[in-house]
Image 1 (cartoon, rainbow, N blue to C red):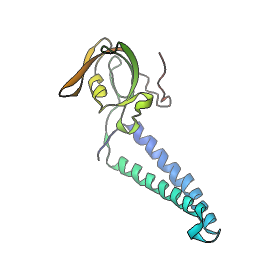
Image 2 (tube, one colour; image 1 turned 180 degrees about the vertical axis):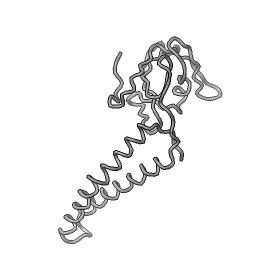
Image 3 (spheres, rainbow, N blue to C red; image 1 turned 135 degrees about the horizontal axis):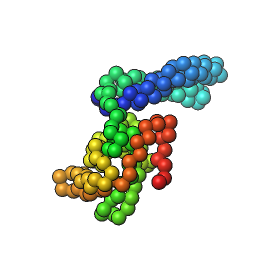
Length: 167
C-alpha cells in the first residue's frame, strides 16, 4: 500500500481514529443494544441499520490504522518561490486559454471536484518544484502532453483552510 502522506495527514487520521473510538463507538454500541431490545431481530430494520453503522465505523478505524502503519511519510516543505505540497497554484492552460487554481495534496486528500490535485497526478508531478512564470510540460501518456504556465503560488500551509480561494 505505502501511500505518500505528510505528518499533518497522519495527525488528521489519528484524530479521526480517536474520535471514532472514544465518541462514535460507544454511541453506536448503545444504538445496537437499544434496537436489539425491540424484539424480533429478523424483521428489525433499526437493529440491522445500527449494526451496519457500527461495522462501518470499525472498518474505517482499521482502514485508517493500516494507512498510518504503511505510510511513506513525506515532507511538505518547499522553497517560498516554488510549487510544493499544500500550495495553492494558479496555472494557465495554453490549449484552452484558461486559468485554473489547484491545491497540491497527497493522494488521501485528493478531490478533483474541489481542485485538490495529488502529487501523483500528471499535473501535480509536473508542477512540483517549479516557479512562477515557468512553462511546464504535462505528460499525460506517451502520445499526449500539454503545456501550462504557472501564474501564482500561494504558500499558505494552513490546513484549516482546505477550500480553494478564488483569486
